[in-house]
Length: 479
Image 1: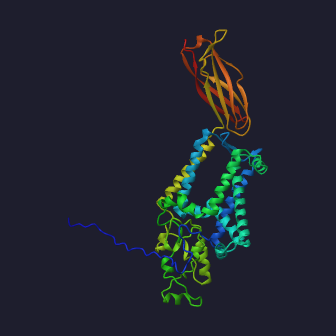
Image 2: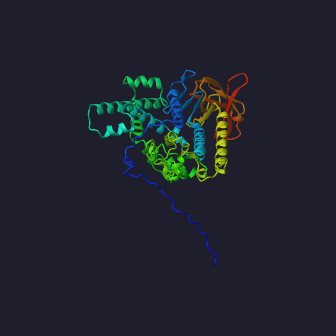
Image 3: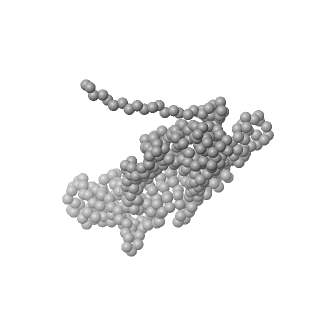
């Protein structure tokens, strides 16, 4: 019993807390965050991605393809038109594959670069910064907005607040109309809504999503990211020491404190001062109101605003940039970040595999689907010439977006006769019910239940033929 369990001594981490006496805008859960405008390379990248995806969102429902809306997710008709692809409830596996690919893409990006999705592409972030832009354009800079809110109500404050909320509601209404336009013809939706002739459900959906957009981007903002969105809670499960996130170089920045611009960096270092001048700009530009100098926090959305703000200060002080940067825990500790590591490779392999399966599922998807319904009232009937007849309904689903002519045939039944029209022309994206009967001389039936195949064919071209078949049963219990 002389063996002892080795114990590792871990020194407590010293966390810097902002001086509340010095900075009166310290953040609490109920504080209103006045986000300061920032310029820089990362801000330009964030705006590019935001405007790019915003443009895709706004333009796609207006695109016409082969005479119809290119993207129309018609829930009432239970079909999704996506350019030349029509998805039906039977194609639910495709939706599952798409969601799986999106999930692993998010896992891969998060393991590599943290919450860049939240900071650069998330709709909540994009619309929040759009609303903040209107705030700055109408009410002024951060300090002016703070003074405006503290000021008593007068005409200047009234018209600025009114104009701001009018702009917010306008953006929310346009956003809602475009969003609902993905589920109903968008050109008719705009006409009907502004002429007060839209249906109850269309109007209700537009007003509901207008309220959601206005509330989320105008009032809730960071609350959506920190308290409602589940991604902030489980993102740490995908992080490791080599994940690139926004980080503060404590070794270089501490001890922080104000200093004159005339003093050189070396002179300040001799006084025990690091490169951080404690200007608090990194907190003022943060949309979630955190201090990145306290270390990695789940509220951080990796938007990089604090990086641009700090780099601007470093440039003015003639200090090297990168005191706050996209870096890894390994790099901050003086090591070298490992890009190719088992977790990241594993996510990449699974992502490629799932993407390949999705492409295979789409490529091998048949544009034709049939379903056979046997008439059971009665199970069979005897015709005047002694033939036994079974009645069927063939449901032909044309999954393509072009009309197609289909021919029905039967295999596996001896000397049968088809009664009815064995041909049908089905419009693109339509379901057609084709009634048909099969008559057989009972002398050729050997069993009370005879299995056979319905076959449906369509010639797309001289070289390509669509084929589908389904098993059914011919019944004659009195045999």
